[in-house]
Structures are given as C-alpha cells and as structure tokens.
Picture 1 (cartoon, rainbow, N blue to C red):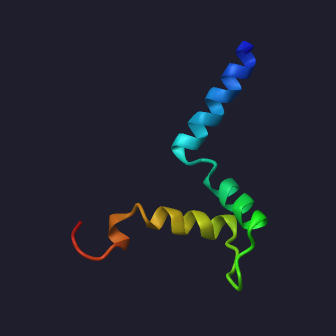
Picture 2 (cartoon, one colour):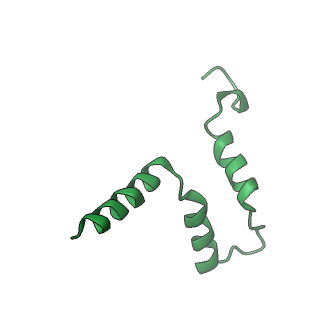
Length: 63
C-alpha cells in the first residue's frame, strides 16, 4: 500500500470513528432501502436529531 493510500484510508477510518460520515451512511441506506411512508430527513434535520441524542438538556430526568 502506498503512503497516499494509507493516509486516505486513515482519514476514512477517522471520519467513521468521529461520525462525520453518518449522514452519508444514512442517505446510502435510505437509497438502498427506501422507508415505507417515512419522510427522508434533510442533512440539517438529520444532524439536529443526531445531536439531540447527545445533549443532556433534551433528555428527561437528571442523567
């Protein structure tokens, strides 16, 4: 494997670990298996919902 290919692969893995490719994976999944009657989220809606899961202020209770 060349150095350039190794760097590209490391960058791809890093984006996957950090979740940067989450919308792209969601969009690919929806394209492959369209939801029945469900609304496909825009990228903005997807990220808002994705981040709400990490924000403790949006959850009920203390923890």
